[in-house]
Image 1: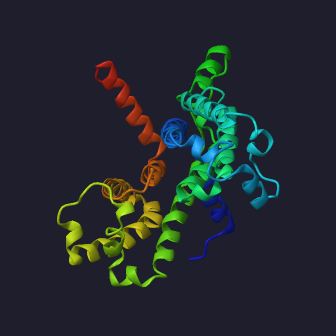
Image 2: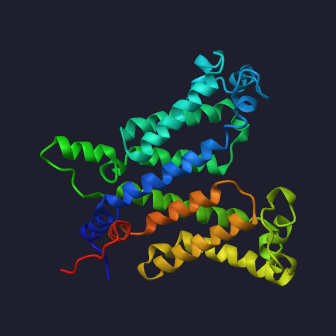
Image 3: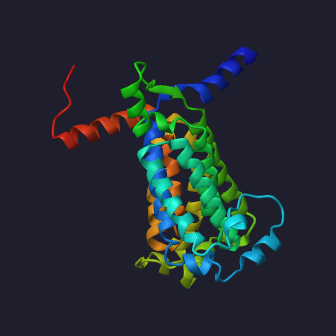
Length: 310
């Protein structure tokens, strides 16, 4: 049966611009802000070694290597004593402001400028985690995450007679979900280019690298048969998380499976923050109504009362 142009356009509009409760974006803002806070906190111990005037890699070397226009406030203020500490304080304050939803967009702009500047100051420290942090933060800059669970919304509703709508278009969250699918599918594609994922030995080699070891996993990583099953299972699950998660019947089971999968990796292997980032992104596949129900039940439990029956 042929699909009409109008039906196709309508499906496109429903997919990207269907109105959903803004509480979903507000909740994700808080989760994402906490991840950003944990991420930047780990840099405090090494801030002088990586970003100061006496760092391992000099500012002069960085500017010579990247002599084209880019966001890096160090190129203007990097010669000021302790500038890295001042910028770090600005970044931390901006993240706190973002979490509570105060001047949300302005806070996010400060976060992006500060974070990207730190990254450009010593770009050789970057991994896929930092790239994903920056990408999703840019998406959120255009979202409605300030319209719920935020001081911005509270102050607006208090001053204005017209309250902020509790529903809005979900196109940014859809783009974040698509980005997540791209990460999973691209990861599978890249893994299939090597022989070790085909023959099932990839996890054997990965679990033998000391720099990736975290907490011990009894007997599982000692059996070549189990390691092969886990290797192939990883490929299958990552492919499903990038594809079938869009199908209603598979969505919830795959979200739960993905969270367990990433928690297991976080427990057994040392890959800083990437697993938490992926778990946070998986949460975007819950609907706005599901977030609304969760927050409502959480508030009722916190108040110590049961929901009233209508």
